[in-house]
Amino acid sequence: MVRINSIQRGIVIDHIKAGVGLKIFNYLGLDKAEFTVALIMNAPSGKLGRKDIIKIENEIDIDFTVLGFIDPNITIDIINGEKIESKIKLKLPDKIENVIKCINPRCITSTEQEILHSFYLSNREKGEYRCTYCDEINNPNNIS
Amino acid sequence: MLKGRNLIDPMDFSLVELEEFFNYADEIIKDPKDFSHVCDGKILATLFYEPSTRTRLSFEAAMLRLGGQVLGFSEAQSSSASKGESVADTIRTVECYADIAAIRHPKEGAPKVAAMNSKMPVINAGDGGHQHPTQTLTDLLTIRNIKGTLSNLTIGICGDLKFGRTVHSLIKAMSRYENIKFILIAPNELSIPKYIKVEVLEKNNIEFTEVEKLEDVIGDLDILYMTRVQKERFFNEEDYIRLKDSYILDKEKMLKAKKDMIILHPLPRVNEIAVEIDTDPRACYFRQAKFGMYARMALIAKLLGVDK
Image 1 (cartoon, each protein chain N blue to C red):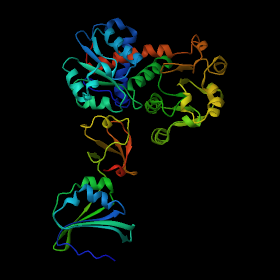
Image 2: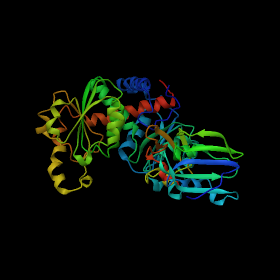
Image 3: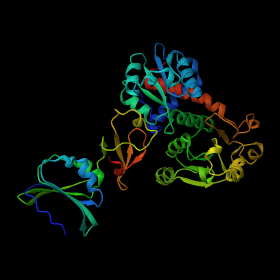
Image 4: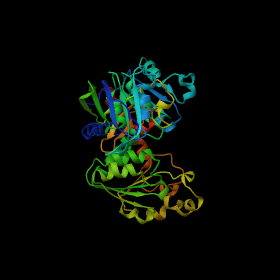
């Protein structure tokens, strides 16, 4: 078992579906971080079987909306003095902008690059998003 | 109130707004001359990034018959798009010259981008395989005028139900009215997409059946909406040969149809309706084209907020 020390002050992003952690790590730009960060992959989880965890030893601004879009089951713990100070519950955002690009090659956003890549939540139960322009179904797997 | 609005999606107008639109269109149909000057001094820009003679002429005829004028282009090569100008920049420029715009574009969502960047009303005149809302308004206006109602109808839709955007829009639009039943006639390869069945028909408790052959159901229909079946859509030649005649409407099949059934088609027709049917009083597809012009007249006038 790999041991990662607990953090003094910072953020723990937990219950990330196994395999998605690296995507979030890159999206948050943590590969360029100058503070301590840990990406734990395939950790055992009672709930998920396997999960990824990100520990950040710093207070940073995170766009929780995007994390909710990627996986609303992710939990966020704000740590202070090695203790959980607060928990943030994520939910699917009604709208996301410039997080993913539309997969439809016939969409206007495929040729006009300056257009805002905008998507609306079309089915909350299925976590389904559609492109604001062409209505094509898109999902978090398209995140770059 | 439709003044200043855009029409991008066939479902943009509520049922109340559609009634307002239909009533205005009926007034135009009753006496078009009364409306021949309502758009005096107004200009419609027809921005056609891909050729579509029929739709463009219908828009232009509509504006001219309202007393307005028309400017625009009929293919991307003759516009600034060929120099790399964005849709947003084009519409911002055109709104300096015109009062309303109809835009057709091969890319899906382009008219929405135009509308988001425009202060003048924008009408989607067709965006790729996505939407063609003025065709839907045309279809509804035609049905309402010829059948006298948009409720209590059995509608057969025949041909390419998979890729046909007009078909998807028609089903969505008609699903808002009471006691509508659909009979969907298509080969398996071209059957209606699952999302239309789940998100539109089943969600709204609309009765529908799917069949492969037109001759089996034609006698049950109040409306037969024909579309073209293209050979290249089939996976194999054998299926095409087996089924192709089922999607060609001829005199023999019409013998089984009700006396007051109407035949509609978004046009252009290739061979899916035999020319011999054209003289049958139930053939309404050319009248439908005329209703299309009236629908566009009513739409332009309503979005501009002009009146006689």
